Image: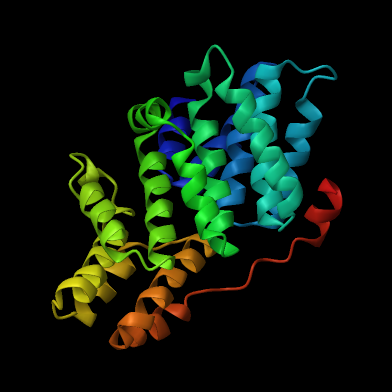
Length: 281
C-alpha cells in the first residue's frame, strides 16, 4: 500500500496502476480493497483510458456498502467527479464539485480529506480555464481564504502549486501580465521546486515568455522546446490550458507563434468514452 501511495503522490500513474493491479490479486480487507480501487480509478482517469476507468469504477461501485458513511462516500464521489469532467458533463460535475468542497470544508477532520479538496478545486479551476470563465477562476481562488491556502500549501504542496498555476493562467488570459509574472516568480523560488520535475519546466517556460513580453528579453526557441519536452507527458486538458496561455501571450508577442504551432501538434482528441458516459448517466 505504501508503494501505491508513493507512486500516486509522485503522479507516476502507470507505475501506481501496476502496483494497484497486483494488490487487487491479493487478499485485502474491504476497506483496503476500496482504497486500492479508488487509486486505480483515478490513475486510469489521469491516464485518460476510458476502458480502464470504466473497469475500475465499476469494481469500486460494487465494493461500496449499501449504506455508506460520509467517510466512504467522499473518495467515491471524488472518482465520480473526475470522470464527469473527463466525459464533459460539466453542469453535473460543477454541482458535485461545489457539494464536495462544502462538505469537506465543514468536516471536523478536514485535513484527512485535504487531497480530495485540492483535487476538486484543481478540476474546477481547469474547467473555468477551458471554458473561458477566467474571472470565475480568480474569484474561486480568492474565496478560499488565507487559512485554507496555507493548509493546501503545507498538506498538498504539488497540488497547491498546480492551483496557483491555474490562477496564473487566469491572469494571463485577462492580460494581467505583471500579476502573472509575480506569481510565476514566487512559484519558481519555492524551496522544493527541484523535486517537482514535471512542474518546474512548465513554470520556466511561462517565466521566459513573460520576461520576453515585459522586459524584451530575447527568446530561445531551443531552450523552451527542451523545457516543453521535459514537461511531458502532459494530460490532454493540461496541455489544452497551457496552449491557451501561449495563445493569449502571442497576441501581444507574435514572435511566440512558432512555439504555439510546434506544441499544438501534441494535442490529441479526447478518447472516446461512449460506454463510460452511458454507465454514469
